[in-house]
Length: 276
Ligand SMILES: Nc1ncnc2c1ncn2[C@@H]1O[C@H](COP(=O)(O)OP(=O)(O)OP(=O)(O)O)[C@@H](O)[C@H]1O
Image (cartoon, rainbow, N blue to C red):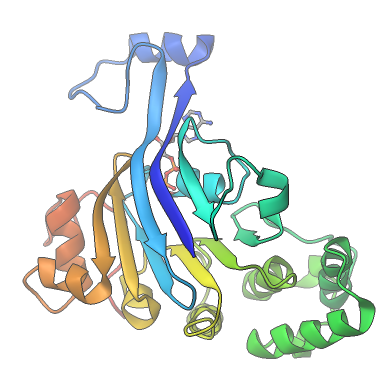
């Protein structure tokens, strides 16, 4: 189980950013700014039980990636806690990193190695025993439909193939908590569906999955819970059904716009995609 409490991250402006900030004519005050800091994440909280999938939603710049980077130990929080099975990730980042699988936009593969060699390499780094590792690679490759291109070099993969291979790399050590930052962005329908089905395969398991997305149909099909953040703050935590009920309609799109503003007819200011 992962529980996030009062999580916050502030970035101190450097000299260049301060100069830029002074030059800017601000039409409205951003509550995340003070004279010296940008408070990108303020009081984010949620919890995800094993076997559940939580969708992290929010408009561009809401603080989703910053939040997920803190969950993965890539970034230290300014305050707050991230508890996985009674241990605070903030206190024990190195130990807890083994319990977490993190896919970000920057996750990549060694270009000259094949997909199988890449995933094997990361598995060995995690200390997985040889025979067990080959078995696990086969299992994950089947779920992600990778076998047909497992002997291709990473540099020859399409975007969708590369993302599936990145995910295999991310999960090869069987993490307790899986954190995926926009795993389907930029992918075709078939690759995206393979990934959503893969996420679905964790439901009912002993793994908690948290993933951010702008595609509400993915949330509809795979998420048990929703957390919505806006301007760095949690503004909704609940089940997908509770989220849907908020908008007074049977789609999640209305709920999203009800909570973060925007005009439903124009799509508002948020990059969010309706069901397909
Ligand atoms: N290192 C940093 N220094 C200063 N500001 C930062 C830094 N990293 C992120 N920010 C700011 O924090 C805010 C939240 O960014 P973040 O990438 O977490 O948003 P997001 O919800 O993931 O957005 P998107 O949906 O566009 O990916 C943005 O305004 C961003 O410019």
